[in-house]
Amino acid sequence: MGLFVHEDAHYDPDVRQVGFNRYKQLLSLHASSWIKLNLLTVAGALPLAAGIGYAILSSSILVLIPLSILGGMIWGPFLAGLYDGILRGLRDAPESWWAAWRKSWRQNGRESLLPGAVLGLLVGMYAFMAALFWWSPAPQTPGTIALYLFSGALFLLLNTLCWPQLVLFRQTALNRMRNIILFTAKYFWRMAGVTLLQLVYILIYVLLAPWALLLVPFLGLWYITFLSQLLIYEQMNEELGIEEKFRASHAESLSNSKTFS
Image 1 (cartoon, rainbow, N blue to C red):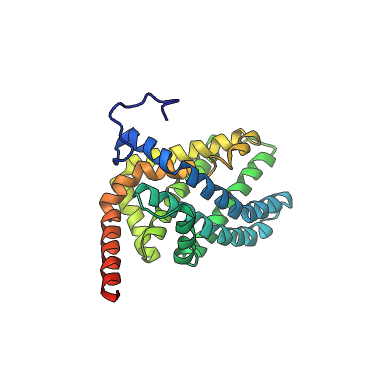
Image 2 (tube, one colour):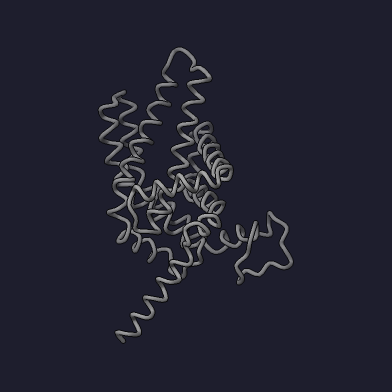
């Protein structure tokens, strides 16, 4: 990282860092693994992208709905695997990315189908509405564009807090939504900043397409997911006790293994 950023003389890669040093440390340790996870996640999103593209080209919302739901269900376990891999890196879990990805499929595959279907449907609807804006002979009013961007930001906020809970804990959808509301209320400005960051990131890809699409295999989904989770991880860990629960679970599994050995 010293190629682009002045190296801290006191930086120790073997000690858990804080602030910007933590950002550098995580990228140094996990960027290559997260790029591989990104490739798998992008591959999992291809059916959804193809379905949305076909629906837009056929100008049919009746085609869009089932294809978006089905594509989202296919994508859900892949996206859960990406979040799981990034969160394992943030809490310094020892598993390899491939073993963790397969484990995520076993643990989160079935539970991620419904959130994936909802996510796919919403992505399809937003893409279809963007196409309608493009096709419209009259320019959209500032109010319409503002409402579109605001609803998109709200969707990104929910997405940012929903998937981490899905891969970290076994809980009901109602409890998950309750945590989202309470966390957003307590850390409103932080969540607003993270959401705005994601919105700008997506707009860059949209406005610079198709050339920006060349970056998808390398940066695409993993980088903004990592950056967003890094910016809220300390607060999520404080409120939800992520690392404390995993330490307790690990200690319990070690105790059980000694009992049966």
